[in-house]
Image (cartoon, rainbow, N blue to C red):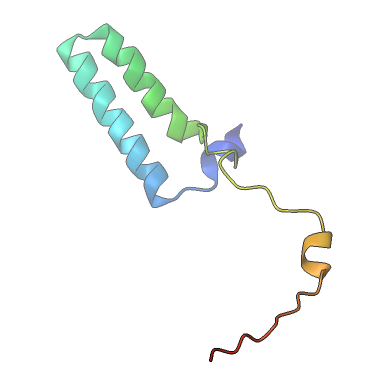
Length: 81
């Protein structure tokens, strides 16, 4: 868990953390407790590096089959009149 917090920081993760912190402070200052719970989630997600794409869930899986590229393709020249 600690390793997840201290590694893989990039500019977008820092921006998400800053946005979550800003939302949290504004929600607490305004006294809006529903927004505070939402802002807490927005603050914790980049801190722990969790979310829909954090674990590589949005990546396209590699094609493990080698049959596709091993097939020779023959081309035929077409001549126009």
